Length: 145
Image (cartoon, rainbow, N blue to C red; front, side, top):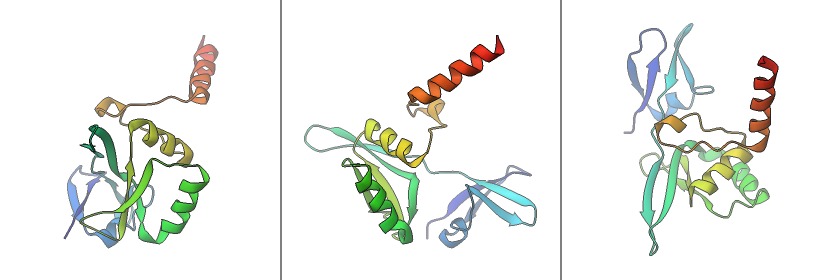
């Protein structure tokens, strides 16, 4: 059975929980005791070369969702014309759906449409800044002068 890891905020200890318990987490935090929280340690996206041209695809748990949200997520995928995005059941936990992105560009476009940002760029992921993010940064810098 797949276990999901969380790091206790109070002690830093890593704990393993089952799928049902993991799904109780809100915004990546699980209340393990009254007032004691643990933060989800996401499994990294998996990059692998596929196809005749060795094209890289990304399979992401972090962008994933429970099977119950499939219709909603598929509607969003079609509405935003994400043709290089596919939803696939997690091989270890089929009731959890992973997001398979055909390229880094497709991943970032999908993330932006869902309102997500990549906070792990220093760990190897490529951070993409939108024009709005750059303008906001410019305003902050100019304000500080």
